[in-house]
Structure formats: structure tokens, C-alpha cells
Length: 209
Image 1 (tube, rainbow, N blue to C red):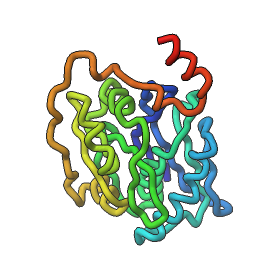
Image 2 (image 1 turned 180 degrees about the vertical axis):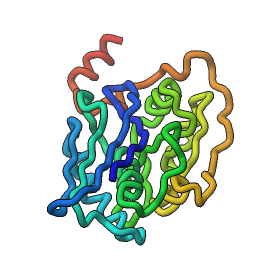
Image 3 (image 1 turned 60 degrees about the vertical axis):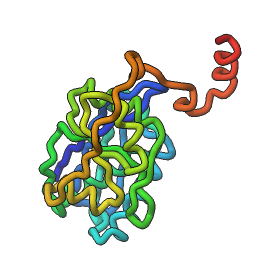
């Protein structure tokens, strides 16, 4: 069974809308992750497996293929844990996702099923809004940052079980209130803290500025 879940990621300091495709089929048990994923993303297989089990769900026991689309965009970081877990629950028939493609997910999972904050939520939220996403579901710790984007509803979750309930429509999302309007141009502002590595280049640009 195939399931698709909307998500967002980072390309440098720019956010990019993504789609997580999860297919559960017959074959030897295992999780195959494709789509130009870096090591942190590939390690999500183990985090998601433990989080599912400790949250009371059935972990993967069949062949699972996860595609992070578009496949030509490099994927980095841990923000894909939550959408991968939601996609697996839907593809394995454990929940029926009713939130729809206009809802995007981002967040890291701890082994006990809690949802941890991730870096770069502000540019991700900007990309989500520009990509037609109406609601962005993020870890509770990222809610204040995501609220900096006008025209985007933000919902916070603290656990995988809570997120699954929101996806299935069994739990109303804890929507955050609208943020205080910021000055014009604030949405386009980012800093080099969102760029992984490249210490020498960032130092040179800082000195030049």
C-alpha cells in the first residue's frame, strides 16, 4: 500500500516543499530509503522504528520503501522523521490519514516517541506557504519560530501518538495563535546558522560583510 505525506526541507538556507512517499509491500523485511538522503536522514530508519514501537504502534515487519521526492534535491537533517512515521502508519493501514496534502509535517523523533525540535523551521515554513500548504505541523519547541510566517496555520505536537491522532482526524490539532506582525521583509531574513558546515566560507562572507 502506498501513502504520500507532504513535508518541507532545507536546501542551503532556502526551504523547499517535499513529498514523502512510503510503500509497504511483500518481501524480506527491511526499510529502503531513497531520494539523495544524507547520513542523518538514512539513520531515521532506526529512530522511526523505535519510536513506533515505543508509542504503541506496529513497527515495519515487511519491505518498506521510502522515497523523498523530488529525488534530485539533496536531503539533510532529521526533520523527515515525523512525516516518514506518519506515512508508514498510513501505508501499513494503522491509521487513515485525513489531514490531506495541504498539511505538511516536520520534526525529529526520539526513541521513546517524543517529537523533538529541528533547525531551519522558519525557511521551511516560508517554503510551505509558498507551496500552497495551509497548515504546518511542527514540534512544540518550533512553534514560536514557525509563527513568523503570515498566512500559514501552525500546529504543535509533542509525541508521535499525538501527531498520528491529528493525521487521522481523531485529535484536533493544537493550533498556535497568530504571531505578532513583523516588519516588512522579515520573512526573507536568514542567517548562516542554518547552513551546515562550510565554516571557512561563512567566516569569509562574514568578514566581507
